[in-house]
Amino acid sequence: MAATFDISKGREQFPALQQDQVFLDNAGGSQALGTVIDSITQYLSKTNVQLGASYHTGTQSNTKYEEGYQAAAKYINAGRDEIVLGASTTQLFMNLSQAMILNPGDEIILSKMEHETNVKPWLFMAERLGLKVTWWHSDKSELKLTAENLKPLLSPKVKFVACTHVSNVLGTIHDVRAIADAVHSVGALLCVDGVSFAPHRKIDVKAFGVDFYSFSWYKVYGPHIAVLYASNAAQAHVKPMAHFFNPTKTLEDKLGFAASNYEGVQAIPSIVQYLEGSDEAITEHEGKLQKILLDFLNSRDDITVVGSTSADSKERVPTISFVVEGISPKTIVVEAEKISNYGFRWGHFYSKRLCDDVLGLGPEGVTRVSMVHYNTEEEIHGLVDVLKKVLPQRQEARQ
Ligand SMILES: Cc1ncc(COP(=O)(O)O)c(C=O)c1O
Image (tube, rainbow, N blue to C red; front, side):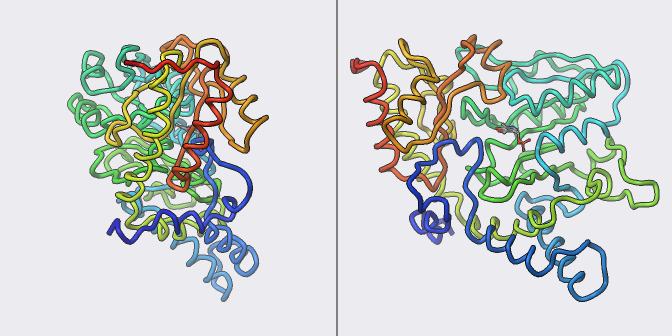
């Protein structure tokens, strides 16, 4: 199947890539597919009416919206009744945190390796329900959440655990299946932030064994909306937030409020169609991209890659952060912008607890380069050339 996905042809399908800019802040947001853009134009031009009507255009609109939901559920191997689409992952976790049913005195475990999206909602929840919070992180030497470093924190009192699938700073892939098994061994629920994983790998919520999972389509070549999965079993812990006269059976009923952005939802089939059969080709291509950059970064002893130095695609996705002796994260970006059309960023990327408490970084955090499959090997070789010009002129090979 992978052979049918042609990376170089894929690039042609993104109108934004036809301009003079190299996009290397894809973990912030990816470019949108031309088919997504076209479908949104079509939807707004022809079928932009309130859902639920029975007249001709209304039924067309209903069908398109429903097709978006069906495609999203199928894409992550969830039932139609196990997903809700909404404004963003942050918003969906906030909604879920308002609806969770837990008992005062229950314990929850939150990780310090997160984008704040997968922390703040649960801190609100803890305050609202009187829950005890325990913090989870890994050693600075390992920088990876594992079932092993979680297990000492688990007990029958723990009812909820939240962690990221991939850190948006470190790029390391966590084994969520092993983590889910550990969490379930004490009868707790696992909520995973899949935002930094979703643009790079296939999602199968059943195989992952997670109870809750969310990611944002605007980082997966689509519009600015997100999806939340809650298994049917986990939904027993979700109180419906619907109006009293509306149904409360599905996750959409429970947390959908006044529906998601119509034109965004109906664009999901275009994304799914594009990505179908792409997993192996994308993983292989992204592996080449990350190796080019990591080979350079690892070759200099004044550069520290923050996270795994391995280019192994089983270990990481091509979101690569680093700090360099003698030049600040911000200065690297500012200087690169003066001499090139390369777009990448510096900062803590909302993973402030990771950058401050775990990594002990300064206020400028890291320099982050985040690649996706539509980046080319030439672009990354070009980036290395730009970095060679911008970084202190010191190129000792590491032996
Ligand atoms: C790992 C991670 N989680 C969550 C978010 C927030 O997603 P959203 O903007 O959809 O709320 C981001 C955004 O950068 C992210 O990188």
